[in-house]
Length: 331
Image 1: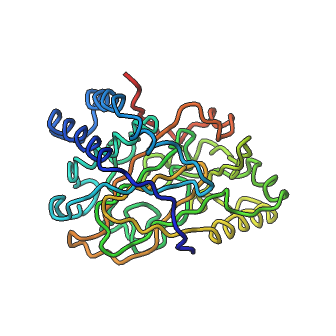
Image 2: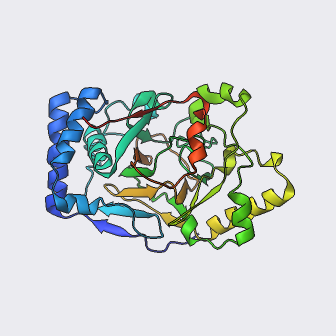
């Protein structure tokens, strides 16, 4: 895994002040970061008033890396309080930062949430949780969180994933690998752009498991667009044993290539990692959680971008395992 430099966009003080002032207005008006139609509508109105400088910082991902880090925001380690023991107990912890991420998401596209995940909140708390140490979810710690496309099982998954760092005393790295950096043969690309296997819902969506009895749709791992290859990848939830040896070998070479080009991004408090979910798979290195209020703590937001042509049209017919995406529509 490489520690090569990640593209960075440095926020200027004026942009930071503009964001913080808008987030403070929201918190004063609503007293919470728990999303509601009223809050989302106010977010959209405030975001529309942002200046061109701020919008330039939040322009689309524009390199083959498929990601960038925003710097310039800060986090008061004492002021945010202890790292929550789980998302379920986080409540409004770090609420001002929830609202900053919600504003950023709204500038970049349409924020989305999931009825079946973290009570439908539009900004998630990603913290290690007792009893979940070995799962393939954001609540794990002791195991490698395998590289994956966020919500790969669902046709309505985010185009952009936004991770804001609240606390990371141990420098725990997020891993990321762009399909645009890999080298695959034409034969492997041809095979992997064929819909062969399904991608099943991950453990964060336990209520979706009943839909696996309804002929889970086979989906391609790769998709060829006019601008280049995109991917839909989650080996931990892909039943590879159902495929023939040729397909498994090609999938294995894809996995090897993603590992070869993987980079480690160790976020510092206040930094925000923006990942193109159609180009980049992400994961996390293992670590030992202490559960003492000082563990790694990220905020996560998901964004759809209207008009993108990065996915096969056939995805529109998938059932999504019964999971409904909630979208903040313009008002």
